[in-house]
Length: 219
View 1: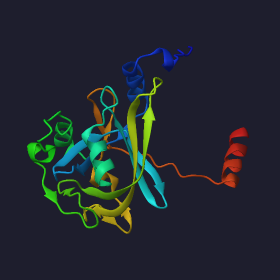
View 2: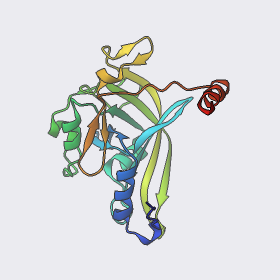
View 3: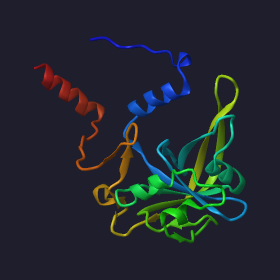
């Protein structure tokens, strides 16, 4: 059994995208709210999303651009406003979060259209979605513009510092979050998602423990 080696520079953007989403999984899923200059609240789901740093707490989302390097609403709003809220997508809101990906006209708010409830944030002007069990108020730290091989901007990597965590009290216990109660949803390829039904505990060994384990295996 051998490998198939493929040069991404000889493939289309769509072909490389399929390989990425079929390989890097399950991906954490989030729903991001932002606000435009007119005060309209935008909501968009992201699966190109993860932790960037813990000191200070930072998270990153990658917002792909439209053809011709045109920024999407989320990226444009955040670049203008400097604030956004990241919500963890769970089993209870995944369907509504997916509906927020619909290309609504510019004067429509996805939040209102799909039926989410907004509530004020504590430290930023962008409101939170009440239905999400975990909400993170963020202020922009960096926006890194990524260009393709032709020099055309293809996406924006947005790094935000978390200035406030909002955690449903039913999930919180002694500084930790109960994963199974949160019921986060991970993104797979295509239109598929996955849930956390079982977790695997693998304690991390120090060097001495690792050496002892190797010695036992070699006996």
